[in-house]
Every structure is written in structure tokens, then in C-alpha cells.
Length: 144
Image 1 (cartoon, rainbow, N blue to C red):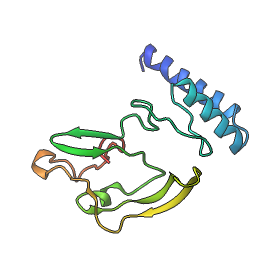
Image 2 (cartoon, rainbow, N blue to C red):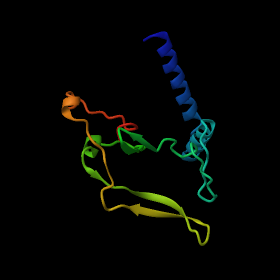
Image 3 (tube, rainbow, N blue to C red):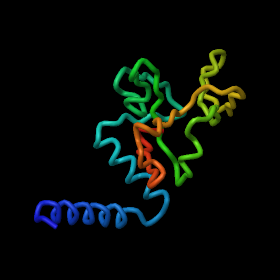
Image 4 (spheres, rainbow, N blue to C red):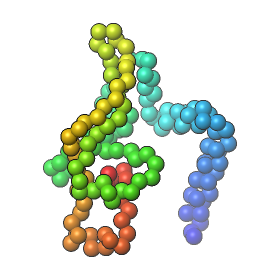
């Protein structure tokens, strides 16, 4: 291992220890993550306040992108997954959204479930990736 990469690993380990030491409970973890996100330039959005979301100030800065003539939706995966089962099949969307009731001005959470397919994650053709069966490890940020 080269000196530069050794120093980078050491710095990352020290940063991890700093995070762990500042996080003795789940509440502390949230506070530490909040602090780090604010320091990184993110804007805090509270459910009980009015949101004035401006371009380039989104929760996920690049959630929609165009590439090769198609619209792509950037996602953040949660936990582990068997990712190859997501490719080349119709997918839907489900989850929780926060909406503003226009009559009362209050924010409310609603569950959302789209019954019909709305997207598909295409798999690269086998002749363009001959070793796909040897190891399948998509980059979850870019490929999903």
C-alpha cells in the first residue's frame, strides 16, 4: 500500500471513530448526521414548516437526469438487496409522501402506491458485457 493511500485509509478510520464516539444513541446519530449534512451544504427541511425549495437545493441534488434520450430517476438504496432481480422487468413505485393540504395549510403524510408499471431498469446486452455472469455488482447510485 502506498503512503498516500495509507494516509487516506487512516484518515477515513479516524473520521469513522469520531462519528461513532459522537453517536452513543440513535438520537445522537441523527444529530451528528444532521450536522454533517448541514456542513456539506444541504438544507434542512422540517415537516412542520413551509418549504421554499429552489433549484440545486433539493434533498437529492440530481434526482432526475437525462441520458441517451431517456429520463432517469436517481435513487438511494436502503439496506442490502438482490439487485439482479430488479433488472429487465416492469417496476412500480410505492412509499410515503408529505403533501400540503391547501385548505388548511397543514402538512400531511400519505401512503402512495402506483399499481401500474412506471419504469424499467434495462440490463446491458450480453454482447456488450460478456463477463456479466461471472460477477454482477451494479453501482446502486448510477445503475439503479
